[in-house]
Image 1 (cartoon, helix red, strand yellow):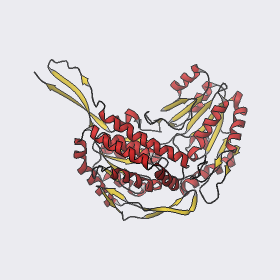
Image 2 (cartoon, rainbow, N blue to C red):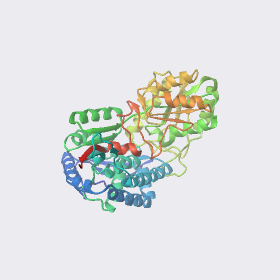
Image 3 (cartoon, rainbow, N blue to C red):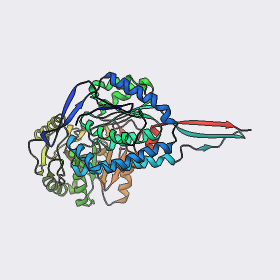
Image 4 (tube, one colour):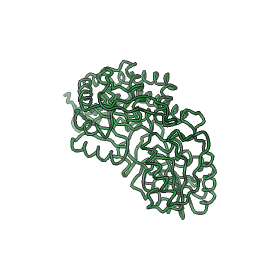
Length: 478
């Protein structure tokens, strides 16, 4: 398979550099070739989106939603093929990837239904004979920059509300999710989305990122990725006075109190930390355990992690597959080396069919850490977890909040009073009790506090707020 751009309703082969995509589960397997765009492709996509915007905005929200509903049906019909391609391209275990594609189906149907909901409110006027109301209007051309770790769900939870609100889109996926992106664009082509409404631009952010933010006439940018890149995007958008949304890093904590259901806590923390090889911005990366149950919890966690089944991504039994790329492997292994040098390794586990012919990292749990250690403060984005002890609930909350990030956090307890205190006091945009840190339902707002987010929200009704503007209207009829 070879990547292509989809611009103005036409499939085009960009003339930039090329990258051979190899299966991170089995590096001898060539999955396809990615062709990267140049500045000329950016200009072309921007013009296509600009020309299409007025016609798309003129459609009713229900008509726009109908395209999303059709796309949902096609996505569901092609679920297995798309999931297999994505697993081969970026290494997520196939069972998780199938679930992600189904999430995409639900997202499209959810936003399709929003096309018949209210888009404004009537506001009483102080003057007689005046009707005053608000209505939601499109922004214009939006640029969507998406990551490789959720190659289906994250693009769709941006594309669907952006299109429903009447915007046209320039979509730049991550390099290591480009082949999957082409398949998704083909589904939108198949539902006969008007030319230029959605434009797929394959490229390296390091090469064309600045031009994407500077050349097209944009009204909004939505980005998911690293904090460093997100802050740079926010600065550029602020200079242009255009709307921006950045979802960035996380260093998510799970707190285990002495009254927790230990089996439940171990299972959910292992899942939150090691599913998708820890490559989720909401992955559990810090575990804070009340001192009186620390030994019992860590022993149970050690046994659970030692038995995690490592396998190639297409193995239905894979709990933990490879990380996505050579660069990702090198980064994560640098933290593994640091853990081996400076911490007490509780377990470096994993059993199964994983081989050296892939980017496999064994799940690791490290202890003997203080709150300032890099393994506790820096986002690793891999299957590496640091465990700390806390004296009591107050100490655990202090440790939980001692981070520049504030995306997700969870607490395991049977104490309803402390559960509600945690929901109030944890400095994170998504807080959960007796659930893992990773994930949030598609109809719920997604986003963080502090350096995790620009403080807008994705998904749910909140996404419609980002991808639209509010116009206040008044008419005197007397």
